[in-house]
Image (cartoon, rainbow, N blue to C red; front, side, top):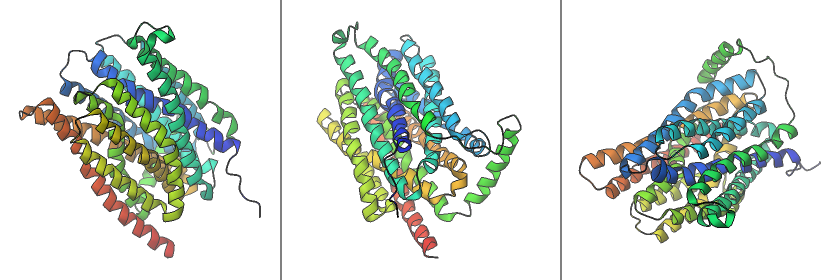
Length: 430
């Protein structure tokens, strides 16, 4: 029997897409947008207020995608091929990520709206990239391909981010006037990077024949399919439990990704140290994501995910008590060990649980759950911080209360994932 080829041009182009759009997650979402938003676009504002603005901006983008994600998945399954939607979101994401570099000082409202569109495009691209996993790889290869893609994302996003950090720390070496111009150019570089490395999958992945052409009639068909899916998911109890658990624990993961730098700035840590910490996370995340793929084969994907959740819970509790840059570095190292693993294994595990002919439709729900989670975390931090300030706490103490509030999401997610594991094992036995 011929052994399956794990490394082929389709798998590599799929991994290359994570290499491409991860630049937005690192340079923009986790790195320079929080710094620029607090120190440039919201210059002169109270630290707690700027954190609240950022939190609500993340929540708004998450809510919008959560509302359209299932519809996008349903349209994709019964209409135009998934990779064409991926191309659309790639083009939009690259354009609006670049546009952030042209917004002037003090215009925080415009920065938020441009960022929301870019973040929506990033999330939309992830929806269709995730759903393409079942087209790219057979079941026995999906854990490998998913972890390979996440590892490539950490490496590619980290390499561009390292260049962007160098530009910011040594702007004159690159012929730039200062760090402000360096960050603005960094936003532009993300758009170019995303577009350049995000296009190969359009040529390597063959198109599928769609049962319908995309037209106005596809919308009611998609809504009908969406309603059917709502009814179907309820009958897949292991999938339903997994989605609820995923919603809970990924809330904390996404919140930490989006709010970590803002949290450090609110504690008074220097921005260069925070950016360095993000670089540490990226480059540790590359081999760690591959390690979690190996670990999942040894102990099972559910057990590996629960280990990662436990680590995140410890990180959340410890983060509320840090005071120094060294402690922030320790957090970055720890997060890097599990961040890619928990995301890659979640995607691969879900892909192996769902009906293959409904991949985009079910991944629409998967991404909808993730985006609803991304609403709760940032909004919870923002609300907790504002309430703590109104109660008379200092900015720093209010910020610490905000970050500690998401620990409950990891606890509940860990417990529910245990239930999903039991249900899945019982179903497989039957």
